[in-house]
Image 1 (cartoon, protein in one colour):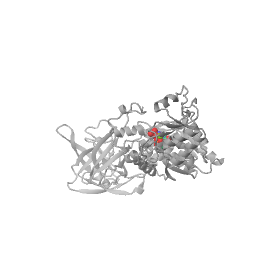
Image 2 (cartoon, helix red, strand yellow; image 1 turned 45 degrees about the horizontal axis):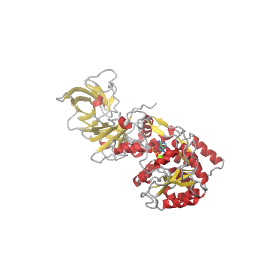
Image 3 (cartoon, protein in one colour; image 1 turned 60 degrees about the vertical axis):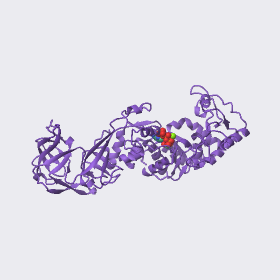
Image 4 (spheres, helix red, strand yellow; image 1 turned 90 degrees about the vertical axis):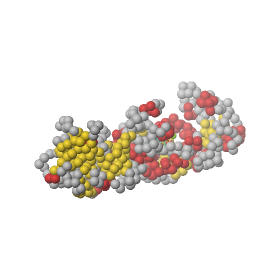
Length: 545
Ligand code: ATP
Ligand code: MG
């Protein structure tokens, strides 16, 4: 981990120095109800990196106490995501593995007079709970005897009652200013098959009861979670205090990470998928880890990004351009720089012999010679990008091709445009240029200065390719969860058909490149040998300050 400090690291260091703990044990506890997003990456990286820093370990625990929402599809996906980020959990467990022990602790609370079975309906429960400004009302069932509570709770467990008809509640304080402490429900009845425990249970513990117990059973020393759990900490501590657990874990909250122009919550990401706004959880525009991966973001760029945003006690929204910055930094020296023409314009070199093809040497990465060289071809017909040509040079700032203007073709020759051939509709069909054999790249020619350097792809060996240009899913920088569906960017995906140089013919899904003067690209998962598809990860130009 970076040698930067954060408040949790300081707490851990003190706890180790003062003998409060002798080894750091953390956990990442996702609910397997959706794919992970980059906000989760903050929790994952924080837990794993901090534990690693102190020589400790991190468990992966699926928080599966909410069986109606969960699915094994997500269990597998989450494990893959964590592995992709480069982490190996100490153990992989399910919250449901502790259902027996959790149940025992619930009985213990009953026996201590600290929990009771309540018959209030869900509506009544919320009515009795009160609000932040008004106290709650005690349940009429609050004073049942220990024996009656035990009998009823066991009957709940044995399936005698319908779903949600009874609850087990901790007996704490209905007048507490903290609503979470107002006799919170700790068990409810749900007759549903659980993806792990199948039909063994029809009562399920609530997160607030199960989580501190699981942390205690596992010997978690520092239970890190996001800020919204701050108000739940008194209940966490209450559970730890009254359940006679051997190990006492401690909960510490940190701020949630947000990113501009995207929506992060799993619930909303699901909605984007279900409404067909995106093509799936791994759509390259999604802030999910599978989406970022498909787009071409690398684990190290994500890690650097997360670590650079630091860890604070407040929620924060980070500019998307910062994520882009770390991707460019990561790939700058690692990937070859090839030529691709996204919006092709055909160029005929009229003084180049028909049928002749020559090979030219090109360096793969000017900043990293270790990536070696390749050969490219040059012939009478080439493609340049439409954006590199205007019929008439508009002003002295135009450093590309125009009629009667000479430019350098990267790795090749100077060419000058002499003629423009138009289609019937007035659009440009192709342009005619001449090249100067004396200006070959590497020849040291210096008699004339070209009007800029542009890239090209030789038509004789060009490979057709599809380019996906991706933009923000949400139009606004700061997204409101209420109306984000009305603020969807209708132009977040543009497809271009162009050409790449032959070195790219064998690009495999996941392979990344810089396309010169354009951006960093990832070979899409759907790309095949006969059908190249590239996703632009980021453009070369940075707006990051
Ligand atoms: P969401 O609100 O997006 O649905 P969640 O908090 O319900 O996410 P969990 O599966 O419960 O998702 O999250 C697992 C862990 O990841 C939790 O400890 C949670 O605090 C943390 N986490 C989730 N989103 C973020 C975020 N944006 N920033 C930091 N940590 C997060
Ligand atoms: Mg959650």
